[in-house]
Image (cartoon, rainbow, N blue to C red; front, side):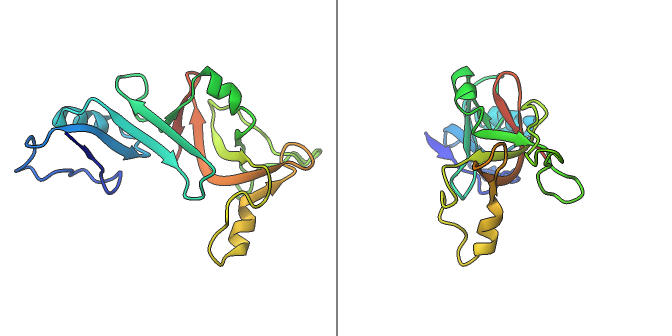
Length: 178
């Protein structure tokens, strides 16, 4: 058996039809799929019992994975059990976004960000120990500086702005939002 690594989530043709069924597949790897029918079609078509879905950032500060072998987590880009949800509650934080400016919404009185429920989702901020947690964008200090947010929930804290909106349901499944 070998693994199938599609070049893009939107690619629907994995193997030429003339060799389909010749090589048994062990699993399919997928990056940010939101089309359950697409995944189910390929599970059945290729006899795949495991779909490994991921959500990752090239900056390296936020990574989710989901090894899906059944009906519990299809199309989720990650899963956190109870222990992981408690561990990362204050580190992976969904926040409201100001629709007019695209910036995170800050309370007029306190100046702090508005945290939203995981079930509703929002842009994910990742708590980091300091401003140079990742090396930055090549020769683009301005873009690097935009990723850091300070004084988000309390004076002196520092968060990395992912720019990606996700939600997490009550069972710990993470879903990418458009």
